[in-house]
Image (cartoon, rainbow, N blue to C red; front, side, top):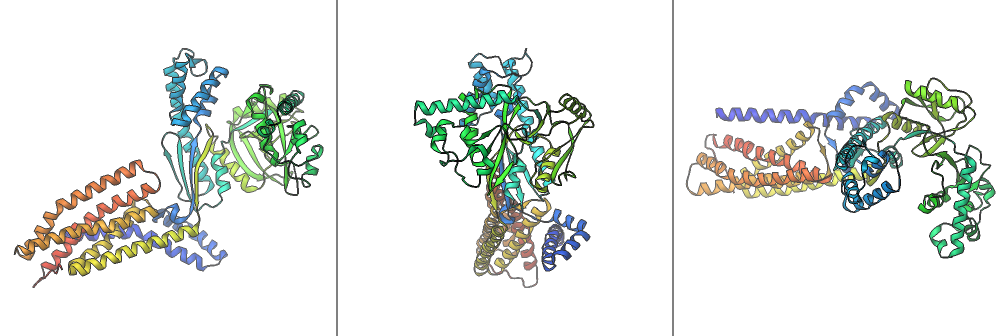
Length: 623
């Protein structure tokens, strides 16, 4: 019995630790009920008064996954092709051709873009040192350089996304890297999908650009319009390919005035005569813009301007950008300005040292004020001094937020971004500017949302499933194994409690697949007891004493129990290593359950049975 005393002390210590780690979860449950019973004002006051305690409870409680709590799950992919394109020192038809082939291959195979580019360059006998690295580098060294840049860009993107999410204020976010270019973002409790997309996707590439020559820009647009019109003349069937848009007339001389009267775009005759200008007003726009168009016409205009054959008519030093906000709204139809800017930025936004969302004292509208570092302030001073009386467009992610006119040289490195819809957008813009610009564009390749009510239903159904599984197993064990079955049931309850305690101790997350893993663990834990009890039955038939029978039953069943659980544990390891999302949650609780079931079935059950058989007139009923 002396040895059992130490075992009993060990079980008590384990149980005490588990209850200690689960206590914050109970405190959180009690806290939520208390806050629900208070009115809004009292609950806010209570949270403010007990902030530190509440934060400690939130940090140490058992976390729930998105499928149980509700929230957003987003998979982001870093555009490494555009990163490589942006790294090129010079651009010509050769590198453009290589990049197009690289895109085609990587889209199909998912291969590493840097490696594919090097292979294609070797095939075409092109020295990549003309575009990347040092002139003396060979293609293999350039490939190593580009691979390093890719890795650095993905890691930088991961850090920036994490910083943005932290500033957004989401509690318990999960941001992890998957593979070479994908980032998994889990945001519990978030419901504003549009805002989250904007926050995550924004590259925060801030640039200050000068206005392009208006005459040259207009001539480029007129040439494109005339070329498109000529295609209609050559073949009427081409009109279907040119534009898939609405077909009713709008007076293009005053889009803002006509927006509310007709929302369907230019008619077929106007489309054929002026395919581009029928959808936009050119000149006399104000705001420094070259033209303006209705919201529903912007996509068609972009398709015209981005056609490779039409790009040839746009001067290489000019680029077109839409304004961030409408310049007019009539009957819910928005009109946006189109700006012609110099392609190369006069100044980048990398020198922004501080950004702050505020209300402009001049316009009483939201704006984001920015302060530059010493080098940026000096560059800004030179830029504004050289362009007094001219407009400088503030461009964020290729969209013009404002194009203020420089009235005097600006010293001190201060500037601002206007044209914001509300303070919420201002705060988001402040966050992305503070976190820094992404090294490459990011695309959302997968997204799903779980509402709080659906999460609550998942918890309820998961608990019901677990309860039914436990009750069925418990009843069968008691009916079939009598007293020994009751001991197995008590060990099973302890096993489930320990699983939750371990998850809480290591700040793990309980998910719906995790609950499924726990339900599977119920069966596996009982399976170990079944092996032990059946072995004890066999030993009792041989006529051994009760103590000898129990000793032999546990020792001889151990090998089979250990082998079966070990193989299942390795399966869990493989699932956790190579699985994603729900599979990882299932594998984690399965592995924890296997370890805890060995402890409860072999150690705790043995301790309880030893206690029974060492009493005077001891009896052990096993069926």
